[in-house]
Image (tube, rainbow, N blue to C red; front, side, top):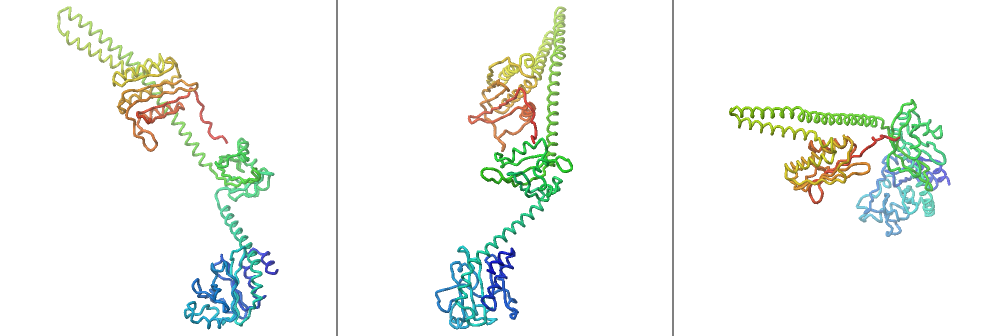
Length: 538
């Protein structure tokens, strides 16, 4: 009872083992003893005051292993190692009350090998040695060693007594070991939590919402000390940004998805708004979340960097849109100048040349052939100017719409390249906003240019699909296709990049791939109206 009482009143395992050993020595009256637990690195010794040199060599000095074992004088069938080992799991106790006689009986055995078995026994002249394993639930927890220089210093009844209390002692020591492990784990957790840069918290949800644990990092991140978290119920309502509280509350319910981190705005003690990322783990009881454990990481700098990047990206979008609009305006201006000014000037030159030719013919002067060649040259130049003006800005795009302009362009494409072109459209007279028609026309124009340059195709199909909220254009050829890069796309040239940019500025979707049957397919979907991304919601 004294042993169990001492074990119950302490959390200090080494002190408890020392106390147990002293109690056993006092009870049995032996001169010295030692206990070793299977988790310990060495034995804990206890000796009377008059034996002062017992601990000068902390090792027991036994020379026995799995091959060199002690034998009882009464039966050579029972073999036990002197030191703690696996063999003791199913072994009973061992005690020898006449070590010198045991040496004489086994002097020629291979176990001794001409050397003394135990340095302690030899040095101090011990005649009685007792070894009792400490067991609990079939597990060997440790080993008790008792020594005495007197012969028959320990009786069989005393060994039976030690065997009787060994299971109870083992249970108590095991319980103490478990408490020691828990204490060390708690110390490790507390050390990690108190030195972490992120807030580590534990919050009770039911029956009332309150913080159970908050790490010291809360002072640096939120401005509030842990004691301030504990002092008020529903402290999270004060901490979470008001506009985000409803979203936050639904994110910590029993129906919430805890597999994804929660991005949240908090109000610091000084009033400043910060962003945190919460990684939470729920603890359930009867299908209800009662406790949440988690980590809160300050991501304010990351969010600010993302906002700056987003702002820069939006500015680039605006600049890109302005550049494309400026290019289209310049093309329109050049087309009109070529058609109106240059075309009219060349027409006037042609008329003048024809008048001069007629006048020279009437007066009988020569130069008829030369003037005829000049007129032909002017006609050819007029045709080139007309084609250039049309390529810069087809009049059909402004007057007849997208489908008609693409059809006119496709006919010219077929005449120049010999590639058959087919247009599929349910309504060829539908009109759309100018920016949509211009972007889609330029994308189809670039697609046909790529077909002529790279595909070696024989035919091209251009299909228009008019959906309730968007328009879709598909350009597909039967050529050789393209080799995909690691992203599954063709090598990014200026033409494809330009198409992607035009579609992106309209919040559309651009896809290009090589179907299994070969060829290349470009698909573009542009909405008639779209909303900008709303950004972060809470």
